[in-house]
Image 1 (cartoon, rainbow, N blue to C red):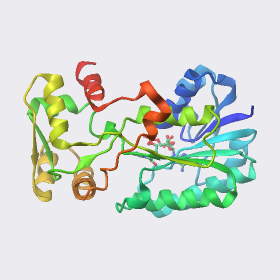
Image 2 (spheres, rainbow, N blue to C red):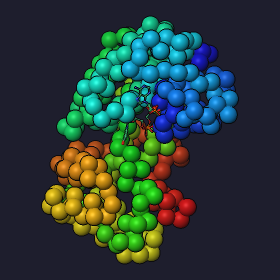
Image 3 (tube, rainbow, N blue to C red):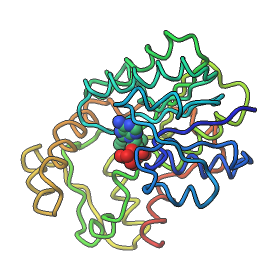
Length: 291
Ligand SMILES: NC(=O)c1ccc[n+]([C@@H]2O[C@H](COP(=O)([O-])OP(=O)(O)OC[C@H]3O[C@@H](n4cnc5c(N)ncnc54)[C@H](OP(=O)(O)O)[C@@H]3O)[C@@H](O)[C@H]2O)c1
């Protein structure tokens, strides 16, 4: 077998996917991590993973990065400039084609055709770019990360007793980033995933009311959900220490989309791929609250 090349290997998803590849039995010597800065992925190098330099903004860096690759886990770029990302992604796709990659697994966006928050344009454009190559693909249409909600700030939210949002009833199909990394590794290590599109979301989307209930149940403290008009919700988050730009995006863009039902679609694709490794909401909350 040729090598499995993982881009974004210095990032959260790429690093986790490499750990899952190793866990699923791939030899460390068959994995290449592509990074912009090798120092940021030194822990992978210590495991024996070969690191190569590659920058989506520098097409000349990619032939050497992709050389000898059979499969590519293409992790989408992290720029906030979606127009730039389309160009970066086209550069990666062209380089993968020219390097003779035989299968591209791409981190796309769940239910992209149903979304209207802007990010879907990057991912649909990239899916179409990949289709132009004729290379076998798997579109890993990742749901929003549950980690955006359940993280090191969660104990503070519990202590404050209130989850403040602008989405009174809408549902969230978020899943953990680690589960998405596992799904990517599964797809890269099994046959049968060529030319498939997977909607990697929760099979059981939850409302913020239900989320607050889970926080109460796990912590033993009373936590309620308070849905406010968007400007007041942004102010409340900023007062709680959330940076203004992030608070504005989460309330005006994400909560508005949640309330309009854009994040409410369930799918069994993730649980089908990763089985018992799936992390339901309550388990994710337990992990950050109880350690
Ligand atoms: N589903 C979600 O909720 C969600 C949330 C956030 C982001 N995303 C998307 O999913 C991707 C992976 O998530 P993540 O948590 O792993 O993000 P992350 O930790 O920020 O990692 C992003 C990775 O992409 C690399 N990268 C960015 N621009 C690049 C370029 N021009 N050339 C080469 N590599 C580049 C970064 O390299 P450096 O280390 O050098 O910066 C890093 O390794 C993100 O990049 C973003 O497209 C999804």
